[in-house]
Image (cartoon, rainbow, N blue to C red; front, side, top):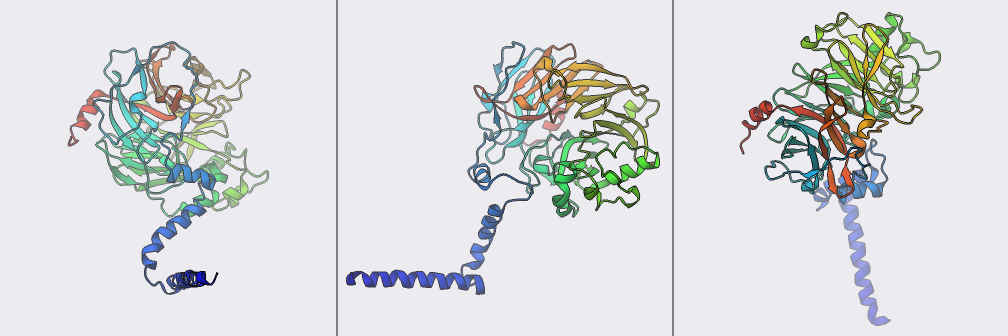
Length: 463
């Protein structure tokens, strides 16, 4: 035993020296404190987690440190129509590497040479989210990875918009960001000093934090939601140029003796005392859930008698409410309540309003559909029953409708499919975000890009 005492002494003295050196690093910042402090802060920050990310520590460790590119893999239900799916062509692909991209499948029944921009989950090297550009011939030609520097919520959101110059805007992880057509990030929109307030009230007021839901491009701006505000963001700088808070909409409604926003507020709230700071205290959890703002264009304004160019159309999911307001006067000239259920993506069409009605509480089960709402009456009609394409989405959703050509673009998030087809029900293009047999990654949005635009924007790229 005595022969081991010197060894024990050396170990004890080494441990004591290490302890004293560690204490000196903390107290007096002796070497190598300055080198260890940044990574130590990162480790502590990761252990504590972000207030918007409610995943357990081990799940965050798996998703962030041990990156799983197939974290958002799902088991898709079979498409109800029998169509032979072909492998996509990745030989002309330009963009960040995507694992299993060659496993994706497509179906095309059109001879029109078009392109579709699809946003969703893809297996990039360091992020789950991004976008691809695919032709009607099944050629995937471009790709963009979406990884913001900030982190407001733990999902991909559904927002996607394309500017006149080919810039892509998304709200991945609740961060509104613009990416150039040729690759690279243009900007991330500033929170405007409102992140702290949004963290305190985000879940309570609108069920999420940061920038959320659909994004619309109109006249040099991206229009979307930041917390409880409708915001307009400059396409070049990311600066917020206009904010309209939910409280302002409520005041405008009260001035017209409209109670369309009151259903989920405290029973005897005093509208005279309502303000941005106490709205969360007077409301039930997630009282409005705004998910789409559309702007009436000069082109479509001629199809409406009671609306003007610049009017805004808003969908509020929890209230089963869609309405139009005029920002410069505060007037609310039109609203419809209860004709839709948990709806998304209300849009101006030629003389009517189209809405994606999730309709999750139908007697026959979830029955999503594209509805046409009359402007001069309270009529509604079904433009397309999405169950025809096997869609049963109770939440989320967006679409594009070309009512002149009777054509619909739709992203089936729950099955990892992007669909294009006629209102008669005939699909003309289908993309399956497959990563292996029986496994797809979720999708969030699809939009059409013309061949002329693709050629013009590609010409700017040094490739």
